[in-house]
Structures are given as C-alpha cells and as structure tokens.
Amino acid sequence: GSVVVNEAAEVFGSIRAEEDVILRKNTVVHGEVEARGEVLIDSAARIQGDVAGRLIRATQDTIVSGKLRAEEGVELIPAESKEIEEKLRRFEIGLDLKEAFLEGEG
Picture 1 (cartoon, rainbow, N blue to C red):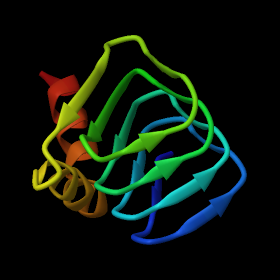
Picture 2 (cartoon, rainbow, N blue to C red; picture 1 turned 180 degrees about the horizontal axis):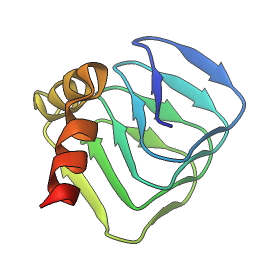
Picture 3 (cartoon, one colour; picture 1 turned 135 degrees about the vertical axis):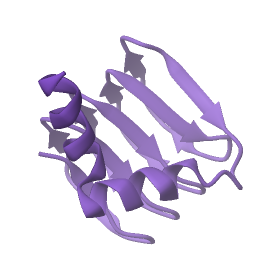
Picture 4 (cartoon, rainbow, N blue to C red; picture 1 turned 135 degrees about the horizontal axis):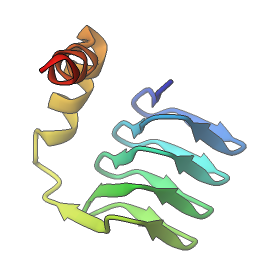
C-alpha cells in the first residue's frame, strides 16, 4: 500500500511502501524513504537519509541529506503548487485506484 505522513510529523526510522509515499508539509524524517511508486515531498520537508522511488516529486524548499534515486527522474515543483494536495485528495478517496481498475478493463 501507500504511506502518508501527516503535516509537521517527525519520523525516526525508515519509511518503505509498495506503492507511493507522501510526505506532507514540514515533515522531518530521520531515515531513508523508499517507494516502488512515487515519492511526493511537500514544502519545507527535511529528510536525513536517502530517497528512492520510481519518480520523486519535491518542492523547491525540500532538504534531503542523502542520495536521490529515481528511475523516471526527479521533478522540482513550486512550493505553492497544489499538486501534492490534489494527489493526497485522490489517494484519500481512492480515485487513482478506481481509474487504474477501469483502464485495465478497456
């Protein structure tokens, strides 16, 4: 499944997910972040470790003290972007899962 870390949370340890990892605003992670899907990092987040995923999307004010590894690359998005909040909203209502299921039927 996916992992969502709430706003202003502090995590001591690594985060691993079979799907996506979403780190909300002002999150601090003392460890590695790894996902088979996307890693979405919202504004003012700090990660003290490596980050790996299929695709990494992070705001320009993200601080990572480690290596970035992403098969499809790393995208920097403006801190005021609503992209991460939209992805989180879709995740919470299960919309991405429903669309993937419907696309598979066609």
